[in-house]
Length: 170
Image (tube, rainbow, N blue to C red; front, side, top):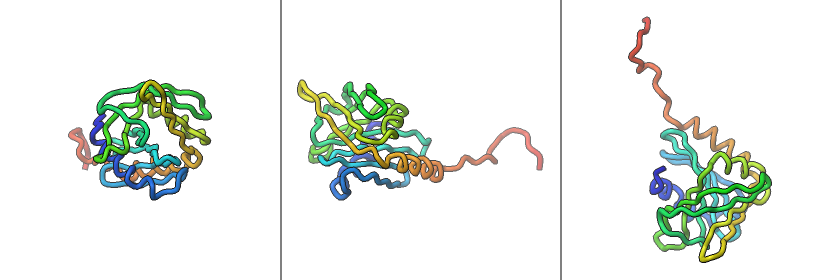
């Protein structure tokens, strides 16, 4: 994974986090990716992004209250209507002001399942001998995730089938 590329993708979401009402899923795209996100009452952001280069998708978290050391991985626990899921949260850094810390989460398929169940989605991140629990509203995620997949497929470069070096007839 290119953590620094993902960091560059996730940090703009942090800047916009306070302009959206908490609990409302929204999405956007640029020439490199398509993403959806939801903000909680503490201005933390849960994001799913898919790259347009190869369609790979990642989940990330940006938080005020969960400081981390860049490139360090932490065990974390997700709780949702689907049950508990152990994941690894890899720190990709902080904003320039050091206000928000961003993590990329492992097990995107497991996270998809947990978010799609709706309701409260929570992740416990270890900090200073305790845990910081970030809670998000997962209601509305299904519609946003379907739109994310559809738009990613639409915007991905089409492979040119006429570049084959095999036999063909004219």
